[in-house]
Length: 519
Image 1 (cartoon, rainbow, N blue to C red):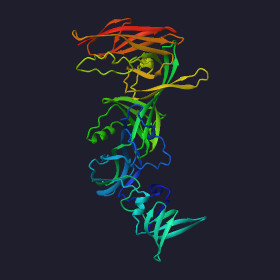
Image 2 (cartoon, rainbow, N blue to C red; image 1 turned 90 degrees about the vertical axis):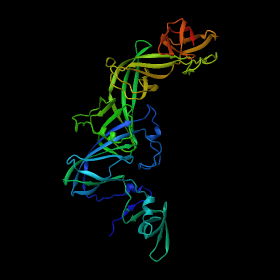
Image 3 (cartoon, rainbow, N blue to C red; image 1 turned 180 degrees about the vertical axis):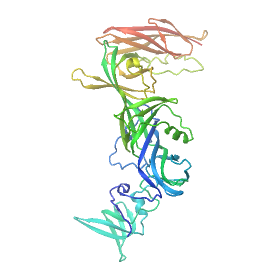
Image 4 (cartoon, one colour; image 1 turned 135 degrees about the vertical axis):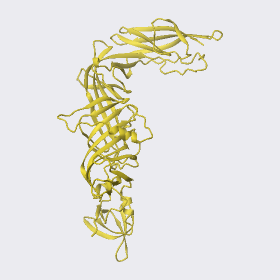
């Protein structure tokens, strides 16, 4: 009697199959997995559709997925196998569906002389259509629903389509079966698999139990950082404190689950060289503790020119999931400064490298909005002082009326080393407005001189004093100097100038300056 496979036409075949494969080597179910994840995602740029459940979506099989995941991982699996001969074939099916077969490494920790002669990666995964196509001309059985009764139908499969079978009966008649509930198939056809599988042809001089290590690189997995900040007012309108929480989000759509994995995250821009062995080498550095007396979070350290975050406890990362882990304990009452910036031009101006901009009307636009920023120092003195991976920063503030946290803005930050400044843009101030106007413009082509005068007004409609930074760009030519100004300028770079201004409640402040360009 042949073994049979029971299949419901309403479910994925892979979920219903139970198959024991003869490998020629007994492979222990127990394994130790470690995972090093690299992200190429831009801060805050992860499309929510990648990790939002799609109604009616089947379990991810590793192929045909829509948008690519901006990241990758190096997976290492240590396990014990029993090699019973000097040369034999073993199969390894606990691999990600997005594995890069060229990065696979197999080594025996018990006998380094053990080697792989040949490697095959089989990824022709079973589904309803493929399975039934292999049984054309073969006798099968089906259970058919007739009202409240279920009857068995047997015959030779002539054709199949979704929900319908064409069977040749023993008496030569043809039976069309609709609405079948289950099928009975003799076996799983050769060449079809329920999981992506690596097959190795191995030689060894030491038959018996071996501790082996398998490593490979896979796409379909990434990580990013989310920062949740709670702002509290300080002694005045220009200062405050922040409670900073940082969370790591891991998106796994690689087609594999990583149970009780030792997790590492790389922060930094890692160049992907064409030699895949470079990735596998990184995954083998260092070992994390096997067990902990209490749960431990991430430990950070410099790693080459990057930063490595190692989770101090094992964690399971299911397939088709978004997992969140605390990056570091919350930092409380971090001092910060509220910064208001009026940029009347509102955009960066392009400089012609070959000739000055003589058009009087170029760059004279005026916008009224005054941007609001929070500025803090990523230092130990402020309660921070740890390398901050790039990510999205969300800021909330408690409503004194009921204590509820209300969202007040969000921004993204780049990878930020310790002792560097963090600047988070929240939005535009409601009660502070500005206006910018060109008051004079003169061009002397004989002397090769442009002189432009600008007047900027900022009005504070708040009931408290504020500090405002007026930001101006010198965009007409590369050689310039401010020859007259009612406020001392602060030159930031070759083009950017700041003018600080303090305004009392309901006060209007005015800046007038003249800039001279020469070429």
